[in-house]
Length: 149
Image 1 (spheres, one colour):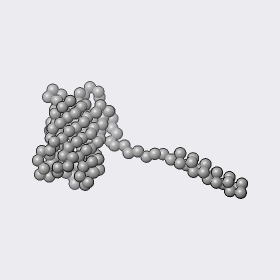
Image 2 (spheres, one colour):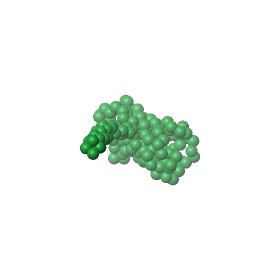
Image 3 (tube, rainbow, N blue to C red):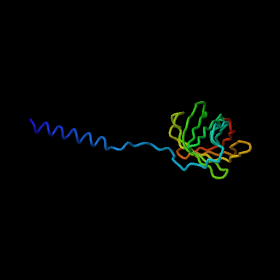
Image 4 (tube, rainbow, N blue to C red):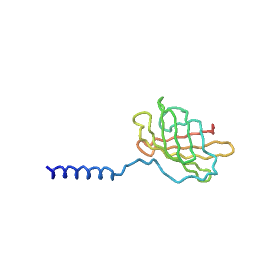
């Protein structure tokens, strides 16, 4: 009986040690380098977005650019609100971002997109914006946004 209790205790201790030693896996969404702080681009940017391939017209679009190099977006596609998160960088006046759709039409969930635009400090605009689905569909289009706050 004593040997059975010792074996049971040993199994419990081994189980607890193995459980504690397991590493948690977390998903990192586009961790890139932090842009220089001298770019006054952080804040809320509002404008519109359109697709070259889907005749959907101009849709409202908002970028939430944060100082920690993260970005979140909100917009409409085919009448459904979409939300995405990712990271952004800036080199000279070229703005770039990579995002992943988290909420929206089911077939857009998980879609990754790349964005580029020209930052105009004086007019507080991101112009000549281009976007491209880097996953399925290879959809692409354009966007223009202006600093809102």
